[in-house]
Every structure is written in structure tokens, then in C-alpha cells.
Length: 230
Image (cartoon, rainbow, N blue to C red; front, side):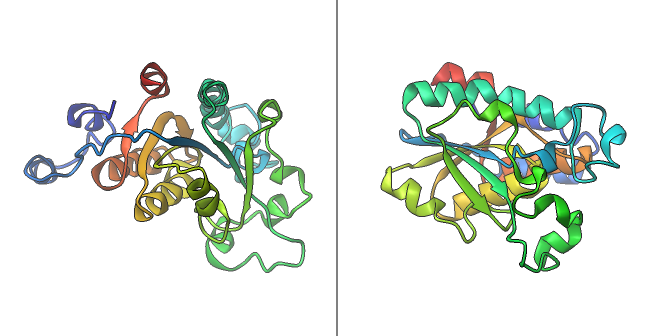
């Protein structure tokens, strides 16, 4: 199911020949495969990162951190994945970023991102989109950093369920999705990133992040390919 080297080159068509040679002469991009006990992690499909379902430039005043139409498309691509997980008894994890009102949000990546009022607990920006309400049994994780594992109980929850594989989708590809995938690989999980169920506000960031994840940390695949295997 892992995308081929030929397919991945479409993400970085500007890659110089020297870099192509490097990839082709090493084990970069080798598929680890997926295990037998997966969990699905949908990262930060919350209103602050989704914004409105219009071209991104049209919603920046209201949602400066929103991804616009591309983010909503990624969320809709993730819904069949979540429904299949629920039907198969696969753990489904939904994460969101929300800070207590008295927390200094200028630390770490929050200070780089801005729009802190959208991420204060109780703000509409911290709420999941309504399409995720149907998953009543999902594990809901509040986090304060990019990775779903950092400072949360997620690793313990997955260990209790004997999970060996995580499938990651969500927002944004180069930010919280990438951080979650790298942390999962660091903890020994097999990792899959669902390419078409991720989105980013900057297209170059998305393409390079997927390429880098494919090189070193995860199998990169499409939702339909995973569902066929499931």
C-alpha cells in the first residue's frame, strides 16, 4: 500500500538529480508495512484549523489559522476511514489543541502560529467539526503541543489496547500530523500517513512533509488503498 518512489517524485518534481540518486542508492522509502492491531488518529479537525469551507484566502480574516476548502476536503476524506474503524472495532482517536485560559500561549510553536484566542479552551475554534459528533465512542485527546503524544495519555491508551500501528490523518500535514507520525515512529509503532486525508495551508510544506515522512518515518498511502486492505 505504500506509495512507490515513482509516485512520491510527483510531490517534489523540483528535486535535483543528485537527490534522486541519493534516494535510489539507499534504503530511503523502504516500506515497514502495517501491523495487525491498528489505531486511527485524526489530528485536529477543529474549527480553528478548518476555518470555513471556502478558498483559504476568503476566510483568513475570520480564521487566520484555517485551511479553508482543502482542509474540509481532507476531513471528508477521513470520514470513511473513521466509519470503517468504528465498524471494525479499531480504536479511533480524535485530537484537538486547546489551552487553559490562564496558560501562556507564547511558548513554543504556539507563539509562532498566533491567533491564540482561537485556541483558548471554550473558544469555538477548539471545537471539533460537527461531522465528528457521530463517533460517540472515539477517544478524545486534548493537547497543547504539535504531537498527539506530547504531554498526553495517548501512548498509555494505545498500549492498553495493544496497538502496534497508527494511521494518521488530519491537519496540518507539515505540523501536527508530521509531529504525531514522527513521535509514533520513535515509540516503535508502525506508522501510516493517509496522504489524501491531510491538508496544509502551504502546499509546498505539505508536499515536502509527505516526502520526508515517506523517506524516513512512515508508509504513505491513500484512504481507499487502506480501506481495501482493511
